[in-house]
Amino acid sequence: MGERTQRVDARANHGRILDVAEDVFGRGGEAASTEEVARLAGVGIATVFRHFPTKAALLQAVLVRRFDRLREQAEALLDTADPGAAFYGFFRHLVADAATKIAIGDALLGAGGDVHGAATEAGNGLRRAVGALLARAQRAGAVRDDAELPEVYALLVAMSRTAAHSSLDDETRDRALAIVFDGLTPSPPPTR
Amino acid sequence: MGERTQRVDARANHGRILDVAEDVFGRGGEAASTEEVARLAGVGIATVFRHFPTKAALLQAVLVRRFDRLREQAEALLDTADPGAAFYGFFRHLVADAATKIAIGDALLGAGGDVHGAATEAGNGLRRAVGALLARAQRAGAVRDDAELPEVYALLVAMSRTAAHSSLDDETRDRALAIVFDGLTPSPPPTR
DNA sequence: AGATATCCGAAGTCTGGACTCCGATTCTAC
DNA sequence: GTAGAATCGGAGTCCAGACTTCGGATATCT
Image (cartoon, rainbow over all chains, first blue to last red):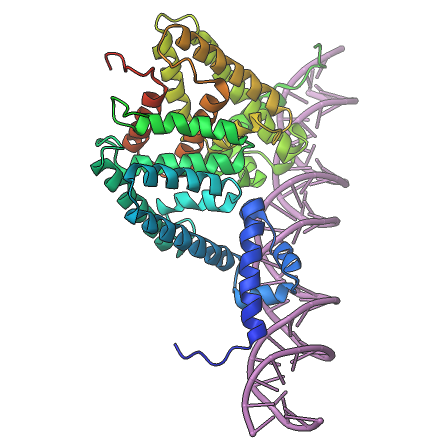
């Protein structure tokens, strides 16, 4: 990919814009304005549009990066000792993470449709990784066998979106998750 | 409230606008335009604004009416024979209902904040009615005692919103609900 | 340091959607 | 049937926010 030498300030701006956009869209959802991203990134609005031809493209870039990161985390957990802890832990992590990233929770469900175009592929990657965590946890007897990925992922999305939008305090969120996890646990709950 | 005699066509338009708005906002969320409401209602856009001074006021009126209706349904279930069936049935009904009403699911969570102003009161009424159904189901042993309204309502909102936005097919939705309901059931699951 | 291609940002344009004005229309009272 | 007032609706106004333009600034190469 021998791109012509890109000036270092341009590359730095690119990264900074992406970081700021993740934060801004995380707080305000996709309703947040491009101008705010530019202002917080300390650049002009034209610079934002030079790096990302459209607002949708910027949002998409943010989502792809975030999904990829989450997928990597999920895949890393596939090697850990306790499959059950890995699955439930990642579930909890994702929900808590989404709580501060409205746009993320909003877009997660895009894996079902194609709400944000190319982000769909990255979203599917994350979904597959969750599927792998789920399958491993089921083989280990930590999750009931009759639970399948579609409904488990739907629960994950549901909890993420709700955590992101409503002002759930942490305790309520954990209690709600506990109920869901209980529903996912095989009938005679293990030691617990 | 001896309002001055309002012309019958005005009253008819008021009702029709409200009906159409419920449908339009139900499908497109609050992003739907006021103009579309006017067009489908067969009136000019000015007429819409004459009856509801602002778009937010219209959305609010739709929400209040819908919340009130749901609350009445919930309260009616308080007299039925099987408290467990009443609670789980209403939960399921609300989620299925929200699936076709994006704006409703979106606003349900407003009960936590005050996203839509006066609709909050109606939303709180619905929440209280759900609380009553929950308490009765718990007394009957159909729902675990340590589940409290905040997290149960959070689950209700979560499932409603997800059903509304993602393209969940009915079967997946039911399977996800089954998992949640299982989590809400007291430890040694009854007959099932 | 100097030349120059690249990059930046302030000040625009343009579009979509909320909201208003006013002549035409329709209901109601007599 | 007609006067009169309430209501209607199409043609605006206004604004916010996405996107563009172009002179000025800056990094890179020699």
